[in-house]
Image (cartoon, rainbow, N blue to C red):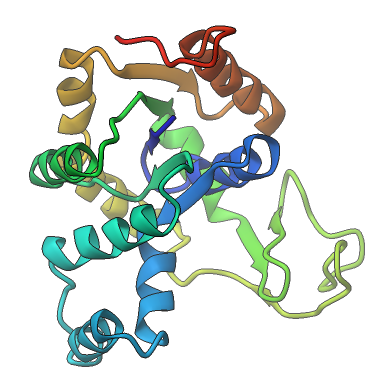
Length: 225
């Protein structure tokens, strides 16, 4: 089974992808993670990525598709979660072609719906542990001891420079301009499923699990939309 997690910045795609990895053995393909990994890999593709990023230029769609294809070929029997890709209609077409030539298909696109104002409030107080990745929030989930991670005891707590109201609204506008057309694109293909992205993490995970379980009957075959 291969799925896309779709939603604006801060909707919780990364959190839910990690849950799916732990609970279902799926593999998360995050564009950012793949680029960082490629940059230090020493491979031909990695050197190309490093050169582009060092020059301050944007990595092309062809390179991202190439990185995804490498991952898929390395684990041909795995189930994948696409997180952060596709972001545009052209990328969606390219991903469909990539899956087809590797004998795979997309089974579901799960949209994490959010209310923009609530999302801004949620993200503006967010910070993470730079060592273990645990996520905290000033209002809803502060650390038990100020400045110390509950999970690993690190004091390396980080706030993203763009996790503020003005920057978040800019990022949301960029999402709606470029990525939100994918909602209609995948709806027309019969692949779109929507869940409440601002519900508690466990509730969102349960709703996603219900979608995936409904797609896979007892014989293990994925239902065709």
